[in-house]
Structure formats: C-alpha cells, structure tokens
Image: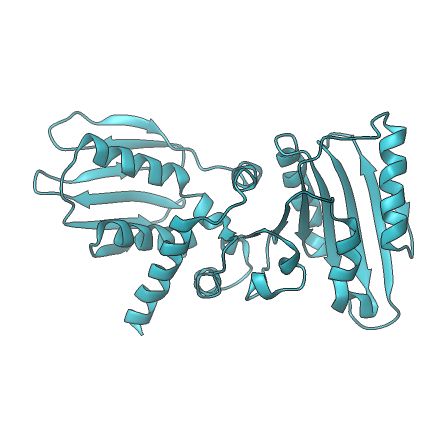
Length: 304
C-alpha cells in the first residue's frame, strides 16, 4: 500500500494506474466500484470483509472514513492492488470542510461505465438514497444488526426510507430461512392459517421475517422471544398440523412436518463477507424486500 498525505482525487487515480503497472496488470477485470463508509474503529473489519467479497466480485474498493469536519480540509489515502484483493483499493481519510463534501472526492474515482454499490457496515444514514455518497450508487447496503443502539428502530427507519436499490444485510441473513420455508410449502401445499417466529428479543432479521410471512401468506404472525442465537424457530400452522423449522445452535435445524419423520437441515449462520457477496450479485431492485419493508412499516403503524 502506498500512503498519500494531503492528496487529491487526481493523485489517488494516478496512483491506481501506477499500482496496476507495478503489479504487471495495467488492465484489471474489475466489475464495479464498492464504496464503504465506515468509522475509523470499524475500518479494519470492514476492509477484511470487502477483501473476501472481492474474490467473487473484483472491484475498485473505496473505503471512506469521515473525520472531524472542523479545521483545515485534508485528504489522506492508502492506495494499492493485489495483496489478497481481487481488484484495487483505497482507504481514504477525510478531515475538515471536505468531510461535508465527501462525494466530490469519491466521484472522480468511480470506475467508468460500471455499477456502483455502497455499504455502511455499522451506522447508516437515515435515508441512504438521499445521502450524498449514497446517491452515487445503484445499490445501497446497510446492516441494522450492527448499529450500536436501537437495532429494531434502525431497521424500521430503513424500511420507512426505502428506495429502489436499498437493502439491508438483516434481510440477506434470511435467504436460507425463506428458501426452506418456501420449499416446505412446495412439499406440503396446505393452507397456512397462522405462523410464529421465535428469536432473540432484538433481531431485525426476525422482524423482517414476520413481515415477509405476513405479506406472502396474508396471515397473522406471532413473535416470540428466545435466548437465540438469532432466529431459533419458525412454525406455520395448517389443518394437518404444524410445519416447523427449529434451530437452537445456529448451525443445524430440524425440519418437522405433518405425517413425515423429522429431518436435519443445514442452516448455519453466515458471516458478513458471504452476505456482502450475495448482495453484490444482484444490483437491480429487490421487489420482495420492497414489499416486506412496506409491510413491516404497516405492522408497526398498527401497534402505535
């Protein structure tokens, strides 16, 4: 990594070219630009996750750390390629007045004619689509489960501010659960009369799963609390008996259905790099998440 002190976007771009030339690859097959907006204390973990995701999605990764907006503006950067990355990367630290105009630093560094995704690993803006950096991206990824306080409130705020291209890793965590539940109803084409979701007391993913089931099945879904980890049980009631997926250890689930023996199902909790990679595979609007977000907002309005 080459360190640039008190630099500019044009100097960072020039260093990208020099870095590729030094590595013997003047033209790298990068498919997108990934912007990461992260506090300094979370930057290392965020970069590790992005590095693992870059093996599947070679990208120009621009990690932006927004410092103190007071004082003299300054842009510092660490630029490099290779060294375990599937593309090239810049860790950009902003200080002073330029913090309020971070998009002016990032915009000249976007890869031409390729999609842009942005990820907030911990503290997302209230409205990602209206955020100056978020407005640069076609895909905006948040993670309500990683905010410091008020995870459920943060998830609800993201649903209220939904815009095409928004998603949350709390939703991505549900992909295996949703696949199993859909497969269960394919095997048992029965009318579901009610359902319940049991999970940790604070679980944005469980809140979304309740909303998804309510939206898809047009039923009332009860929410119960367990010690976790994460979601531990989902039950769908039918006239022939309950269909249940129970996962007590976060790794292996038991699938129980009417008139059939119980069977084990792999349902391991996934790490952030796998979740990020999944979201970067699709850059179009997620219509199912959009409907689920609207239903979660409606369910919470009914409680107030």
